[in-house]
Image (tube, rainbow, N blue to C red; front, top):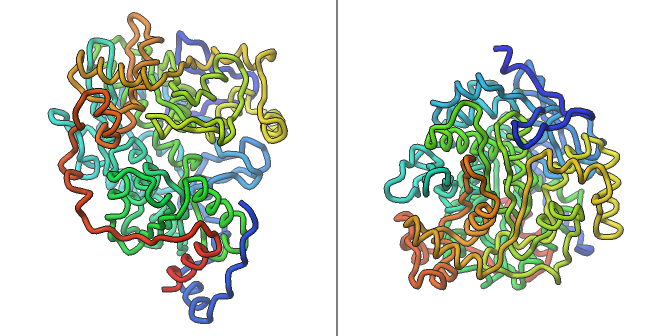
Length: 543
């Protein structure tokens, strides 16, 4: 009814409330050789121009997206779906966050995960007809896809909540095909991409670089999808046997694994070089699925609502009772979804941001100084997915913190580009930070080992090292009477070495992954050469 149609203002002067109530509101590259006539005919038959705008798929749309830097006219969900950065270099966000009030939240209490996802995503993707969006969501969030739940947990819940003790919970987000929380959004992204590309008659060639987790999640989401190919670069011989097997064992004809002779930075440099060749990028429809994609953030909002409802049920809380979330954080995408859920009205008291030794974000929330690290300063740790030097989603939060002042965001990121940092400590923005519910902390390898041991000893469950970062920092900020939900970001089977150090034995594996290293593998070994990667893409697109 009227509640569902109402949107919250997020402009200047509208603060998010306080902690006691929910928020109110690489170098140059060779030019590829000319395509043959056969290839050109193939390209024209297979796809329209990649830079043609999408048209709305629904006749009535009200949700529009803008850039954090103010240089993009408002667009619909489908118009921004395939993009990463906005044309002005910023990140996309809704013009206004949709509101959820107490009555609607109460109505959602009995919803399945799929029903809840549809209710929330409908607010962000209103240019997709409701019946189509529901079909996409229903196809995504099934027990068959999220089949790796621990013994005793119900896979039909998609994100089962494990109560460790009264008021302390583990929200299990890693039951998807690659055993990482990224599957929660990436599986939806694959189905959304296929839907929109089919409607537009376009192809998409996804190019990415991975050290393990993101690549496997993207490949499992896009495998077998019509009009989509994935070209994933990884450092040859540098991933774990488990991660290598997860990716290279895929036999789908639209998945291409390229093992680059070099390190992860070489892979990233190739992706940047190809993406910066705008003519090549447009002609061959090069896209990405990295964490700044808005649809990934939107999909992650859902499990904050699901976790809140499950935790307040488990603890028999009164209506509207606040809950805190502890979130392992690297790129800020996961916790950004929690911030948006809070802005929508979800009664979140604290968003507890947990980093490892790479404490760029913890430093900001403690001091007001945002100082991205150089590659040489970025430490390799036992929670490697959080070994981040620059938080790529952080700009979205700063946009909200600055009352959605795009000029201020441009000024701050210009300071980062020129001097490597910005300092808000002496500004009203730093004093305003507390209104958004964030607290933070960091942990060390020793902390992770001890936390894994403690959780196993006291609660009989094994957690991975990233989740251990979250639990350790979460417990530091736990408040009496406020349920604490710790987000699990991966299953321990992905990090056998650390688990062996902590517990003296290998972690259990889900049955689906028991013998994954013995499966046949399909991959191509190549030099760290962007021109060679371009030729590889051209040949496969024309095949």
